[in-house]
Amino acid sequence: MGKNILIISASRREGSNSEALADAFAEGARSAGHDVRKISLRGKDIAFCCGCFACLKAAASSPTTRPR
Image 1 (tube, helix red, strand yellow):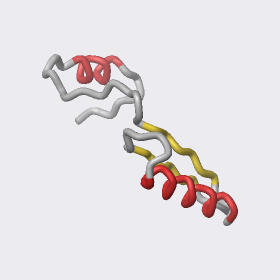
Image 2 (image 1 turned 90 degrees about the vertical axis):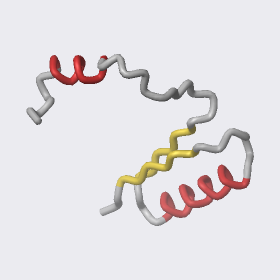
Image 3 (image 1 turned 45 degrees about the vertical axis):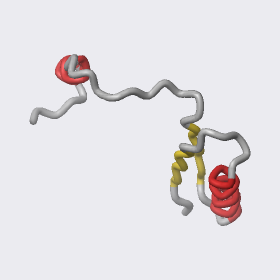
Image 4 (image 1 turned 180 degrees about the vertical axis):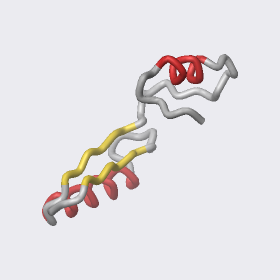
């Protein structure tokens, strides 16, 4: 039974050495029978926390959130 593998690529350049390494790893894992998913952070707008507590409000209203 294969494992689920998540690869997060944080390289800013398309075709960089880091991305080539991640792709080679993914191909090797797939050929070994594992389920591989690769996510690239290139072009994503990821910012620091601004302290608005929106995440806590969303978690509090979610039925799947466990109490802390």
